[in-house]
Length: 349
Image (cartoon, rainbow, N blue to C red; front, top):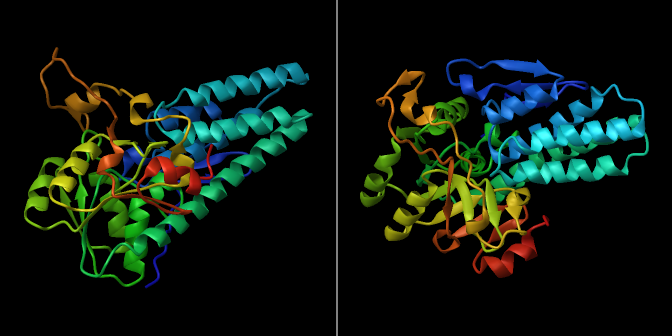
């Protein structure tokens, strides 16, 4: 069963980048082109491009665009300007490991350039390498993870982890797509994923495109379906994984993991190795992004809560490693103990 992914969330056009505006989905499939790294930075902040791997790719292209647009001729000047571009991109979102992984790689190659011409060529080439690596990683991990899905299973997933989030095949959703492509008869339960509804808006859009049967549910319904023996497997993505296996993912993931353990349902995390941050010992060290309060008080631009109330909006939560059955990467499946096994399978520092 052949499945064609006929949309590209991010595409390099030689001297500019083309981005699918995910904030307009599912109503509009609208792309925009830009040669301005500031616009790329805003696109990352405003979730026009989102998902940890896709953010890393966009960040790399943003830095390349900043170098291309430089008008400074002296080495000191263009090095200073590129460092300023890198700083702008680095500050867009604090939690996604892939952003910093990409920035670190782009910074390293920029320091090795001996001329402005070499700088531009090197940064463009490295950004394209990062993009290609993420494409290949998402396909490999999807193929590896698909073997965990048996015929007739119902899989619960949270947020959005398909091609939109990775620029490639996907992570958690990529595994589901790959299993379906292999002929497995499956059903997917899609959490709506409040407050920004990435599940309702994006995951359903992607599943519908490839023809995989699914049912949209609210986040608070997940426990009910588990209690009714209507969930066989849970697969989610990740924005950062620490050395001990603790995982940051979209808010609501931790609750699913606790419920899964109570109902003895396997709970898998799927992410490319670029999402693993071995410099952090545990999830307690992960910086959790706090987003605009209006994302909670408004829905589709319509106010749903009274004025002048206290509101909290952490974008992510931490799932302790003890709740995670295994971590699926392009290099293989990492099983407990994560502290021992992550270094053996991860290619990241």
